[in-house]
Length: 578
Ligand code: PEP
Ligand code: MG
Image: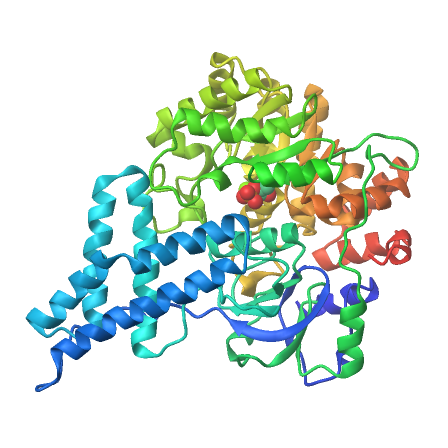
């Protein structure tokens, strides 16, 4: 990764070590640009299972049982206070958890264990919560989903009993830099960008979902920084999400520079086109109705990737038809008369959904994920297509549907046929597996369009887990092998006269966007914040230049060379501060 530093610094996204002052910076992978300064607040992991132990002889069991009630009250009060300080979904979630901490069922059952069996309070809470969670799971549906909340409350009460830090994202009044080993998608989804100034994680790569969500929220982020766990609580750090550095105790000048830096995204007024007027649709990636509204407000020409699984990430069971139709309709309603590409459930690997994925797979990224989940649960795909068709019928958006992780011509053919059975006439495939890129011709003889998921295409072309920070230089869509697969897909699209888009993170990199357009990609879908930057660079570059730079990138022998040769050929990047 250090090889990339000069290039990142030269595009003005970063600040040099000398400029930041303070000690030598920690290095990681910059995945969401921007400078931010703030005190470290660490995401504490749950303390874990307390040993199965009993009270010391002569201990006062009644007093020990009383400590459980006090700890539960402390947790409920803390959560209620945090809930008051926030709005919307975050508030609801905190209030629900607070209510659960106040519920006497768990406390009474734990106290009984202390009184009757002399179990230690922490162990008693652990056992009692396990039992309550099990009962809830047995009830299924909404109640089963609450099992997670019980376990969250359990971990908090145990932390209060043992004096350990509260697990989860810290709830603080003052803005802070969140430091964690890694973040679960649910943690990241609930982050408040007005409080979390930056994110630093020890794990994770540039296309991990933490990185994607941080970019969507406009929070500067550095992932894969092995030194992150050593950052002390409350120490002041300067995070450079472009250069991938974290400087401890930055000097005053660097702090002032960070505070002066504009955080607003460049405006996009569309439509996307090159300098000579070649149209390039600039679309948004969204995960829920709120994201769709934000994308429409940002001027996106449509939605190029609606990640439907993000509506259902915490669900223990398949959402019902009505609920699905409701969620999809809200997204479609934000884009009347515009294209919305709905991706069917992409469960598996780092996005497990218990109703379609297996808990035990040795290599989940190579396992039953994406469209493959329809092999074991064909009815889930069928229900989802029915819901998408009903939503499309009720709204005015131009609905396209695509399947993730298509690997063979037969899968493409089956998916298109399944869509047709539901009256969904524009059915496509995501190209995320190298086999699909190489077979793009025959696949696109069946499917109506392709959308390249460069995040997974890079993972599978380079055999590098997209979550692994230590392989970040392989998880780079500038790798010439990945660009050659994009080229092969576009060749297949041209043969069949079918459009090929890109909806992976590569589309949001303005320099790489030029290469993709030069290779023949006709739409780019990205986090709405990136639309203005990508549009500005395309508008300054004509198609012939895009093609020349694409050739140079494909012919390069390393990601570093590809990036360097293209960036050197695009002086507009420096002019725009990109
Ligand atoms: C991709 O793989 O590039 C993609 C867009 O899908 P996801 O990031 O949701 O896996
Ligand atoms: Mg993918």
